[in-house]
Image (cartoon, rainbow, N blue to C red; front, top):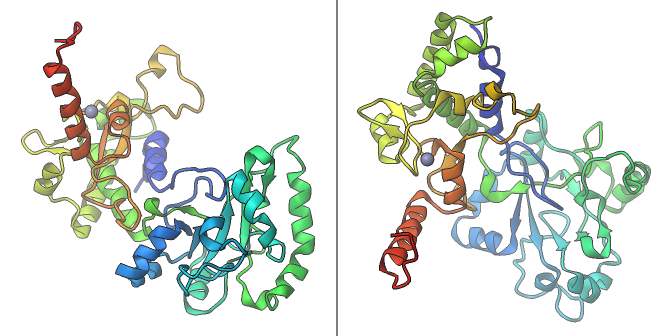
Length: 379
Ligand SMILES: [Zn+2]
């Protein structure tokens, strides 16, 4: 049986991209899988403790709370009384300096602290098991700096080495050399999970709202793969684009995905239609915002290519993944029956709102124009 990559590398890439958390600056790890370690803000952590502390166990590769210096310290440099007692710097939290004013005011209170260092990405099942059943930790340090306009940037907040960077390579080398003595401060390396090849210190975790377990990522991938196969003309285009593949092979693959979806309970077409990503009568996927059907060339991004305007690494796709309810901390909205394929333009209009909110917003704008005394030339 062929795999999706054999059928179309572009299609496979599109599905694989679904598993990536968004990229961010500073402490946010760039382009990691959605099940990677999560960084959350203090107010979210407090809410979780209040409502459902077990949620913290969901994050199998760990979590870290980023605390603002002004939240952590009182004016004398002591720990604020309002900080939850379970929050421990260097174990499940760190102080995150972003604001230059904060650095001037509170930086001096950190002189006995160590900057955050990632020791393991906790990728293998074995390491995930150790992290969840022992007290071993996968990172260390109590604070980090991302005060870019003052030039203070901890190693962990930087990007991967580039040519002519400002000594990042040397800083990593120094970290490797200093690590044994840093670890001694924390009782030695036995207290930690450390990857053979030290992680490249490009952030510590993903945004919490992007989180999805590996299992849920798999269900979502299958459901969205199946929906894409139902875009009219897509299969024909796949066969046309790739002479090494036959329609029989494409059909066999589609059947396999369909079976996985049925087993996972993700092919309830009534439900898909209710969330607005499926046309029941036509039996085709539709854009959840504008309700129009999708075009295979736009899904596979071959539309411009025919005209020879494409770039080698064209990331401007015209059909994109859309979330019906927006991603939000603790809601785990990257899941089946909350996803659909839609137009890039519609996705831009939606922004970080739910589809419902986006429609209400459009209604508000339209009615303001219709009722306005200053109509201009619009109506
Ligand atoms: Zn649309």
